Length: 266
Image 1 (cartoon, helix red, strand yellow):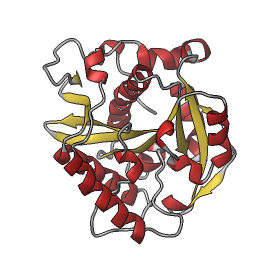
Image 2: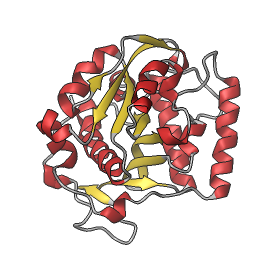
Image 3: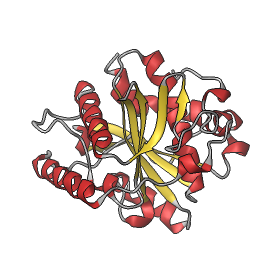
Image 4: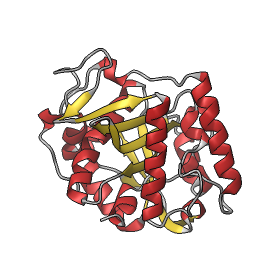
């Protein structure tokens, strides 16, 4: 279970400096674009997924996909003492196919046909093995993600989760299933279910989830997109391409099941 923190714990306005970081005690939650921070985040995803049995070992010891590097995508991190301890990324649907479409094309097409703006949350990972500490950091990072999405006119967030964790994502945050169960080749054929978070209607349909994600508004400056420098994007695109070429059949499309990745680390 994710430990519920007081709503006041996440507030980008209180002590933010020019880079507009929001903090819970010494943990900092922010949008990232610096090369060093991104590399740390991608290495954390690799380590977390490897421990969870979702990927095979790779000499590069990074997990990054091209979709994370699109102009409209955004990597989010939680840092403590300058070290990335939790990360997730958002991939917008308007810029092309999202990873979820590799196994749930009909469900993603339905979102597109509705005319809503949607994005997928991918590459969620945490370095810690204590689930209580892990989920305590996840909630404010999900809050940053939800408010970032709303600030950038995204209506719905999509994720792929292990079937065992559907009830958790629904009960705690307000996600609803939009698919049946399918095999996800890019995570060594583990099962997955697609879920959706309806941001404009969350307050009405899931008041508790709304309070957890929007109970304290984050300053708009902290929600600005942090674009990648061209050289940084080129470097990680080359790495993503190299990883994709060596990936098992099914490619390196990503999934976002924090509970799956973290429960195996406990």
